[in-house]
Length: 187
Image 1 (cartoon, one colour):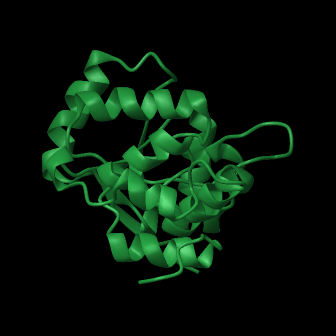
Image 2 (image 1 turned 180 degrees about the horizontal axis):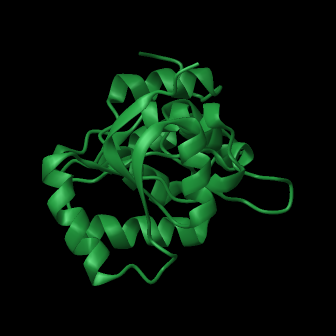
């Protein structure tokens, strides 16, 4: 069986994450080495993002999100791939290194690119109406919607920002909310 090929450079946190990506797909993978993202790596990624593209695939935990943000803030135009925490764990630890090749392949096939704030189309009212904030079970529904959309989980405010920053289409959002059992009853 041949592995899918990824044209973009994939950025991961550690060497074991790189090994997991290498088992899943054919791609050029670079390692950040954790939070200490070097100037050299940022310079390299700035060059690569215009030529081939860059996909950030960090662990689905707080540290992974900080590393993702640090890179994305310094390297505009990066794409983002997310693996749900339950697909990246060995029971005691969370990380890309624990994800199956199929989970990694799915995440890399569903990348999202950031869009400017003026293009945001999902409102806070949409979030409230969908039962994703301020409603019983909102965090569970957010997790389901995040999984369906492949955008990674967050608290209500960070999830709303992520939906918009990653350019989730309102109709795609509504479909994911319906699938997750959201309260939205009209469309």
